[in-house]
Length: 338
Image (cartoon, rainbow, N blue to C red; front, top):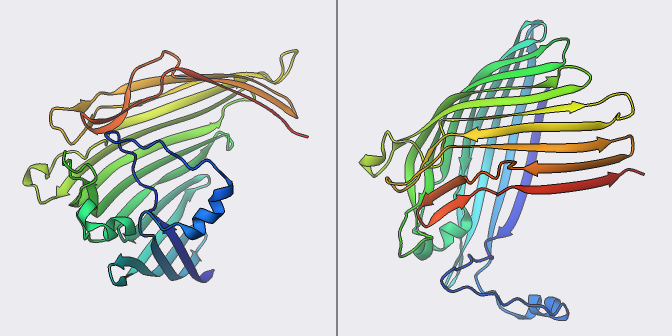
């Protein structure tokens, strides 16, 4: 089966500024009658930016024998950014030829071995390219390579699906914050980051009443190329080595309480690095739960997130930019289908 496709994407963005904590501006336009008039009559506070993407690809999926399926694809990308200048604008064009390959081999019934190889190419955001004074550009495009393989299984008469994936990913020319106190928007380009690890996940219905999902990931993301020799070999910021979670659901299928159910689960993340050598974000484990009642048309649910009101941090870059997790809170949903 062969596909040939051509697609065009045009977009505009980058006109929403950052919110300044040192000089916050809370004034908003509140008269709807002026919205349309201002759109056509008022000048842009910032120059609008535009980018265009054109692509053409050919892809073929083949079945070889009874057990092997192969997919081969080749994609040609054409990127164009319109950069505003004092005397007009300049068109910056970048092209990329991107291959992809995948294969699935059925070892036995309900157990498949797969492998895939993909390359990636993406120009940096046009707003970053346009404002060199603020962001520090010009920057090279982001490129990547991914090699992945694994197993997919259906167990217990297809009541449980389980997957194992092993991967090796490299990303080049990554934009990271320069951690400059005088210009918090300043960016710099890192040569290469490499992620290697594996993921395991399982989901299914073990019985008429019980269903579960569970996952675990082991990941090592290292900085492998950098203009700063001290960074090479260190773990990337906000990249935990271990993370995972589970979610279990029990629902009564008969009797006077038919449709009543309870769910419980949680997730954990181990410690992570930041841009500051003296700041390490600690690990955390958060538990959630839910109570619900469900019929053919009515569903009522109460979700309790962060049951034990754990204080934790989702991520961060330095002592001034660290992001807390949500405290304990409740969500209630009532829906009825007509």
